[in-house]
Image: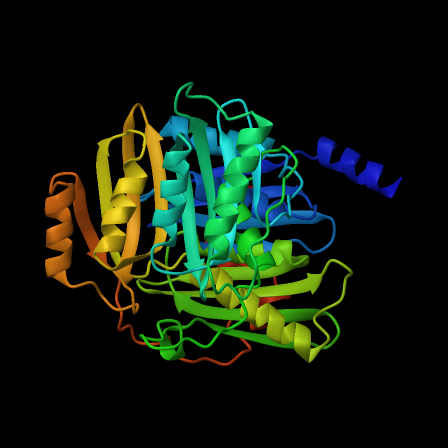
Length: 443
């Protein structure tokens, strides 16, 4: 009965979205008011993230039955959102967003839709792994139409959408799907995988690809640190994000995070907290030129703050992993060319033969064109020799493979501050966001 009443309240109180370009000098301000429900923060952040908007500041409040959040956003060029049609579209998307389809928790699976077959992969990362996966798919006449691959802490995860090369449609033959799963699982297991790759057939459904990657890596426990032999410890020491937790009496656990700023950072953090069954009641986000500061007041869905040391350590590890998974480690290479069967297999083979290790990749095709982005290092995790890149570009075509930029391997660590952040003093004094004096009243 309570659940039905909550649904009725949400239907009656549809989200109210106000978008304003006058309340802030350097950003568009988006205010969202709605009846509160679990996961609504993630829904709103996902809409903004999917439209390639960068959230420069955010103020979150969802105590009681009401949700009221404010986001300062800019486009990919750092400018305000001026296009009226785009503003109206953002407003409609947020107001009509009904939430996610229920999560699928299988670590590896194959799902068919009318347009493509979705393949999920998880296993131990190693040099050449993506090349081996792409070779198997090419041999089985599977054309990769889009994919995203993440690696973190010696683990790898991917969501790959493929079609039948002969028909251009999804692969539906059960025997063929079984063969694909069997061969890919063999590749993922390798010869010395301590965590055996699992193969499961997931139930059909639509899942946000990036959220699914977070779930796959979380299920694979990539947040547990592992000892690495040789190479540079990229993820250790000063380059790692700073995450601290503090309980306020029996009410909330306060999480403060400092890290290098990057696109989609807030989505990654909120996604992880949501999947770990934590609710953000209050929070703030503030970004500078290079650094992002985030502070959240959370409780578990059971209404309690974090109560054990083991859980405190686990939450810190999981948030660190969420921040690190999408970090653009290495040299960014962009491939733009005509799409064809086996293209990805050929490109990744050339990378492997030149001792390049793919840390992250985003694969997309549209209108017969392939646009792929790779972040690469050498096999030890160090920057790639420019002579090797020149050689690879000559093999592939200098006009086809472009060098974008190299992420910094020597970044100064964020400066320390007390766990009790600057948001703490004003949070409970303010009943509306007018107290922050950063937005105007919309009443």
